[in-house]
Image (cartoon, rainbow, N blue to C red; front, side):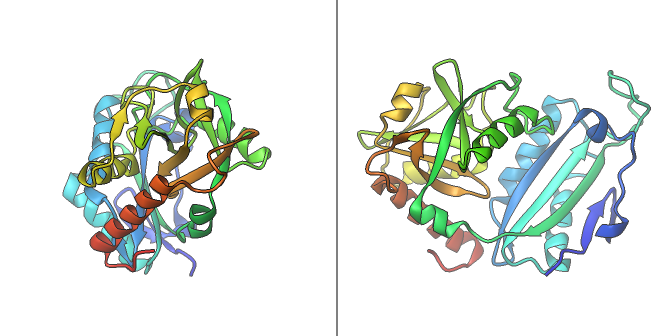
Length: 288
């Protein structure tokens, strides 16, 4: 079905009628934040975690969201209901608002602009079962990757370079240190232990990343937040990436290097099963 209703600054309107002012700071400066929230079986997955991160990003940017937490959450629920979304996502964006173009922040009486809309989206089951390929790309982004801001040009350039070469993802690195994917967190497996970059300013602390850590801890899987090098990535027993839309995605080849046996590894597959079980528990869907 075609999604018709969107939320724009306090109103639910038809998508064709949703317009953004040319002096909105999100449009002119990328001065804003966003979240993508997954929907399974008409139910929102990890809703509170996404909303908490949205408000945390806003605080780090000195941006005031003109809705309270519960009110904004209810908007998400209503959007899903009116658009009859069963399997998809909700995109929510908050900019600093509309004001004459200037680099410093506008006066305090300017209210932030909030938009949200839904999208139908199937789980990437075939890719999860077969694995995907990635390429290494130098991480050229700014030093506040912990903020989920609209400033994504570095991510886009990395993703485009990977996509143009037929890869699913770009795995970024600063010098020899691997940081994360262009739209995902990156993980390696060595001697039965999962390693991933610590949640510092150099990566986004992904919600799926947090769920994976929780599942690993509960199921006795060693999970270490520690930096690793490009060489350690390429020699890993398993590699996987994780995001709201990709879930737990095996990487079976990086550049021209085959990872492990060139198929999803056993620990990655176990995490996929645990993640699907968590979806089933939270959203009442059949585990895959």
